[in-house]
Length: 338
Ligand code: ADP
Ligand code: MG
Image (cartoon, rainbow, N blue to C red; front, side, top):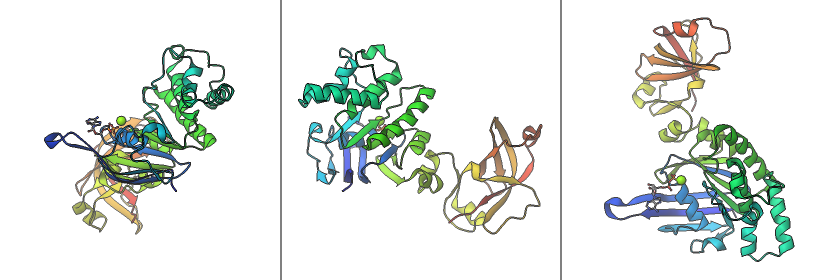
């Protein structure tokens, strides 16, 4: 059975006009050993979802199964799950080793074994030799690792991480992204990782669930969610997207429906370009050029109506060419897909 299965999971807060469907009829399965990301804007229900899985919140309706067991009514300490919170929640008056070993003491694990497991957990997060320090004597990144070690020391079946890298600056964040993935591979525990950062979700996880208003709009491997967004919301939230509305699609693409095309999939081509059958070909005028080093972002006002964002790699020396593009008539082309 899957590590996690939720069925028809719903959590509402408040009543009457103030009623909020924080989590709304969610069905989801997470496989054993998976690195699973929950991605969505602030307020979309990610934290509530984690709290329901961990047992800090009781659902309004629906069920939570862990390893096939119905744990819906079980308290958090009787679920084989640990949580890493964004603010780390370390005990300031305890040493690093005491913080990490806290759960083992509660479970009355023997002293020698506890010490060995604390050392092992600290080694896993590359903090050997830091056991004697206080949390206040550590950097933000190191505190994050202590919180992770504390959550791993019980060897739970599932680890829930709620925006664990949110408090770190960009460089450290990128380092920890790579380390978290490596640690997950090493320990083989199912990770459920919450983030509002789409790059983080796409680069770290085996699968991503995209949340919006308490519902999951799409679940799948990163490339699938990015390349084939299931809804306009997913297309817009995960990466940048040009949405072609149905009436324009009918003219340009020959099919009705809302289409999404990524800026980097569009080429600016010559007037005389012979478009292939599988390509969409359209005329327009460049209305704006933004230079960004490796790339330039063009805005092309299509004769057919929409304003397209086009990403162009600056891979050739184009002296003065980018500025001169504004106001110029161009053609754009991209591959059609079904
Ligand atoms: P996220 O983690 O994606 O930002 P949350 O799960 O924290 O989203 O919140 C989802 C929605 O539920 C929001 O509208 C939030 O205001 C509401 N909510 C969350 N917790 C509570 C609560 N304890 N009481 C009332 N409303 C809540
Ligand atoms: Mg949250």
